[in-house]
Length: 281
Image (cartoon, rainbow, N blue to C red; front, side, top):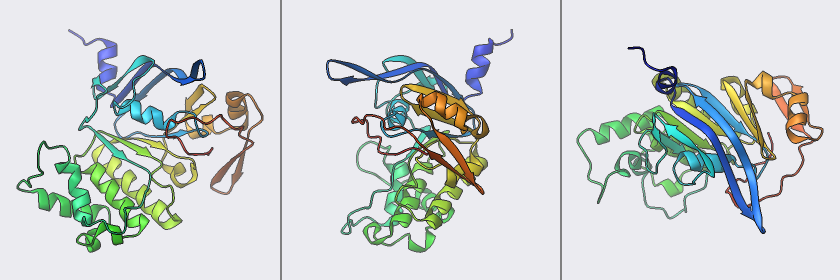
């Protein structure tokens, strides 16, 4: 018997979002961040999530991680409902420096990607050290694997966070502004690591960013969220003056300078506490 079409579609997706809506309390009522969101993400697909501060981009990632309940709809990861601690998901946060006195070594940060999911005290298993050494090499950190993480630069620390997120070879990689506060060289380095891993292992990538330029050449589709509305399509479909003007309901201009894009005229969006700190692309 032939499998139903919807079952086949689900099997071909890593992330499936249906009718998703999220409201946040505001004053005596609710503020709608977005609603009616449908999204299928295929293995190996790279999707950038853009929009102004307060539009709900980070909150979307939290919902996929099972940390934020939706107001409506559902999210499924690898065919099962979104829940906390899903080992099929890797998560890369914004770059925030470790305190200078942090005693952990670089390899200890990487190892948390394996040991952090185990109950009780982390007990190394056979093959763990080899796996950590392999990941240190993959993220370009082998030469400082035994150094204290607090003594490393921001870019070096962020490479370790990427390695930690990749240790379980996740099917879905959620990136929450992983390039923030990094210089251009480290932005390129971190982006290359993420792109190389998704090509080699077929991980889908959902990449929240305030600047599309460092990842533009790698992006398959863009989800642009603004003012309770959203637009989903290829970069050429979404990043147009006409499209963004309609999305915001106000004049917005997309300018091209060589291989870079500049979006200007984005209206302010009333901020709220959903951990979204980024500006427009």
